Image (tube, rainbow, N blue to C red):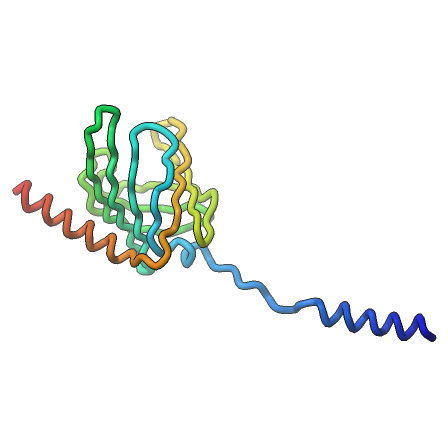
Length: 162
């Protein structure tokens, strides 16, 4: 009888400790929204950039690269984005770069995406191996702020080139 009472008591403990609560996992579209800072591009020039992903599918990028001679180059991109099957697709909108003309589709395979880290590897159309891009999320920064900087700079560049 004592064994039966002990077994029933143990059953209540096991059932009481188990959880039927489902864990909510954020979809990648929700995780990527925000501002990301490029931590390491892996090779080549020194790169500094911030990427703003808005909820409405806009990807704005401000980037500075410094080559081996110390010459700095400022780039900006105003793109659209979507995620499908683990791939981040970015369609180039406004950009001064001749290597990324308007309409060009960038395919970044997502290796890691969580609350703090985004690691992608760009699919190359030219047959070369691209390095991993490692980004850190800047919590509390509005991605629209990056888009506003891009818009202002694009207006400045267009005004000075006319």
